[in-house]
Amino acid sequence: MTVDARHAIHSSRPGKTAWQRGRLLALGSVLVAVLLVAHEYVPNRWGNLGSLVQTFLPWLGLAVPLGILAALLRRSALAVLAVLLPLAAWIWVFLPQLRPADPAPGDLTVVQHNASDTNTDVAGTADVLLAAHPDVVTLTEVTQETAGRYTEAFAEQLPHHETQGTVGVWSRYPLRDASDVDLRPVGVEATWDRCLRVVLERDDARIALFVAHLPSVRFGSGGFETELRDGSALRLADVVAGEQNRDVLVAGDLNAVLADDAIAPLTHQVTAPVRGFELTYPAQFPVVQIDHVLARGLTVTDVRALPRTGSDHLPVVARIATRPAPR
Image (cartoon, rainbow, N blue to C red):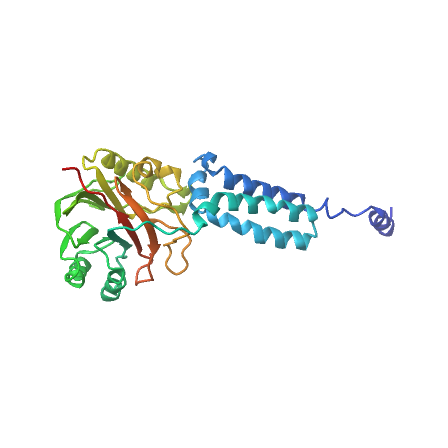
């Protein structure tokens, strides 16, 4: 058979209709929709896939405009229609946290910031944090040198302070019973020192405050590598569970989003509202919120990201409603 004959036979075949083209695109939209509504069932196997999906879950919404563009280029009515599935799923999952709400008033303001150990603009960073009129500032990635400089910058408004390793707290109220908390994951050397416990004393409350910096996560040969963070989070959860004070705050860089089931042993004990997308990392173009202020026995009424400092993280400010301790 000649080339011309084969071309003639091929040309005589009927082309696919708009409802027949784009089946793979449509299947992709269905899979994205399933991931959105059933993300908690994605197993933490194959490179911690469950944590990876939950960490970047809001960004699955990008499948909608990309899917529409691909469907139009493919001229597929089937793919256009299928894109409605991830759109509906995204709205179903995230609409509750996007609804406008007036936060309840709080009587305690806590600012948390990973100040970065390479941040040389201590004065500028302190100005940004103090502009939020905090009662308490908690910092991670502070060095021995910068801790002293922050103490000088905060002295007028936050005269009480404690540091431990690479974390610290500066407070308007007295701090008592400062102690280090060992959150080292298995295999990490003894110099790793990233958690401090203090008791914040107010006239109407005695609050146990933990300032923590959990290990970073990485993309590596094993996929989304979270084992060190997960082990440290489990140790922090055990410590919080054993805390005798009724009122507890946990502030720090947890290197995890609250939706990540891998840190559920901790977030089942201490919580914060999820409203909007107060993304904190990386500061240049934030894609995740990994810096948190969480509470037990108290109510975190509002959490907002603050303007950028010299760090690679954005600070967050949390308003907290306390309640009088029983007499």
